[in-house]
Image (spheres, rainbow, N blue to C red):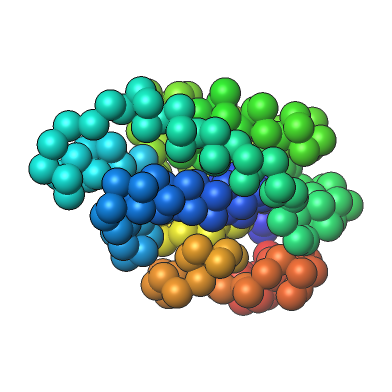
Length: 221
């Protein structure tokens, strides 16, 4: 029986991934080089890619990273300010409460990022548990550590939890932790391989949570 719903954050609740890519893509273009989409896609949902190092490798020389950071971050913030809660998130939160489910969040980002945005979006109080990379020594997905921390904090067994993810790295992490996982790709991850998820939705608005739980667990929930 499903007793808890665990959300990813970036790209699932809030589309920070598109602004991040656009701001980096524009930064690379400023230096006369290209940031390929496939290179970027491989790192979505984790923190292993170093865009500064990759840019320096393409240029064959070091860059002023602080200056690049300031320029790129200003543009990123400009784009982030236009982002709102993704469709279906609030309805799923409301239905989860109606169903008596525990509600958690597991992110590869740090609390400073996640908590601030949740507060801005008015969602912070919706989550019983918020587990981030800095809760598990900075380990990011596809490592399952952040999901294992959420499972422990929610006091459930892995098969009592359903994770919602948008990226292959996130799905891998959720499944490695023993959770059911539904992939809900966004415009950045729509073309990536999410076949290892238990179920795939084009958007949370496609299906009520109660129906999704039945589909994911084959009616055994």
